[in-house]
Amino acid sequence: MKAINLRLILLAVALSFSLSACSTSLKEYENTGPEFDLQQFFTGELKGWGLVKDWQGKVTQRFSVDLNGQWQQNKGTLYELFTYSDGRTQERIWELEKLANGSSIGRANDVIGDAKGQQVGFAFNWSYQLLIDTKDGPIEVGLNDWIYQIDNDAVVSEAQIKKFGFNVGEVLVFIVKQDQQI
Image (tube, rainbow, N blue to C red; front, top):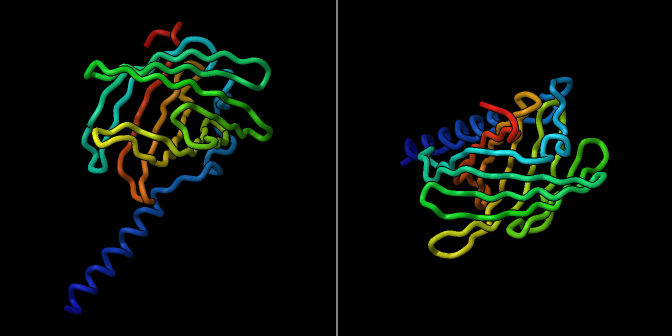
């Protein structure tokens, strides 16, 4: 019995160290470029391709997304139309606002409360609660979404999906300005 308890304790300690080693801080991206600008990048037509993975890393969904962003001063609207590999579509309309010091807030129909974001260097980090549809009805999950600017025309988004503090999935998206060729 004691050997099993000791193994569980050692496993829990190892797991907590591995999880803390995976966390990233915006501070790590200070003085990096190109400097990400939410408004500049998400203006006009864009195209994205992505996938959703479950907690084990298995791809559960693939999609493309058409985006269109329009801004007036520091407030913008970002329209997203997702088309999944099974033919389903989903629309999300973000109302975005750039604040001081690289921070931003966003609201959308399936986002609970405000999405809060912060930009440092080439990285932008969003955190928000999202309602997602499942076969058993909508559930609320937390997203920790990192957007990394590759160059002036492309970004990669990597979002961890959490429920009750546990990682239950991941979303990866590559987005490019529509007038650019890949």
